[in-house]
Image 1 (spheres, rainbow, N blue to C red):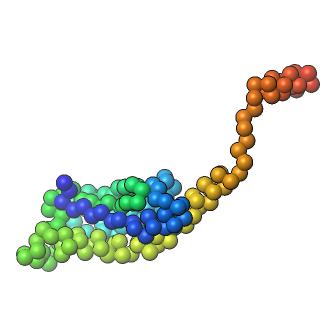
Image 2 (image 1 turned 180 degrees about the vertical axis):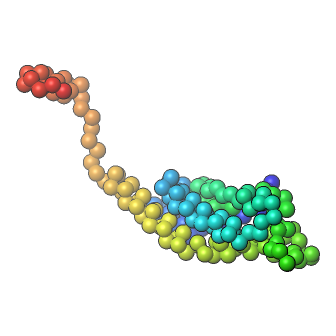
Image 3 (image 1 turned 30 degrees about the horizontal axis):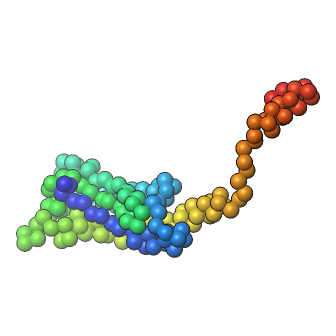
Length: 167
């Protein structure tokens, strides 16, 4: 179990998918790329403010996307067991809450980073969901072209041979 693991449920996104699609569905790869872009921004913000002694915990920040339908989630974590005790030089962790994520420097950095990307992430993801739904709608409303039958293919081949225009 990582020392810091925050599951950020994207409820607004799930509700929007349900509204547009009619039911919950997984986010597709293009939509996951949008989440990845904003997760990367969050990690960059955390690292920009992260105190560095050896650089180990600084380099261990990572994220993953859980695209489960109706439970879309961005997971941010740092597996270093001392992450909740990290603090800027000249300060010390509150001894009564040491080890608690909510009052730790890591918790404050995560909250600040998420607050910075929350609105732009939702806007960009809704835009990508709209694109996906438009493509899906177009694909389901266009008449399907059936493949040529064997007789049709043979007729086309014989016509091509008669006219001398190769295939």
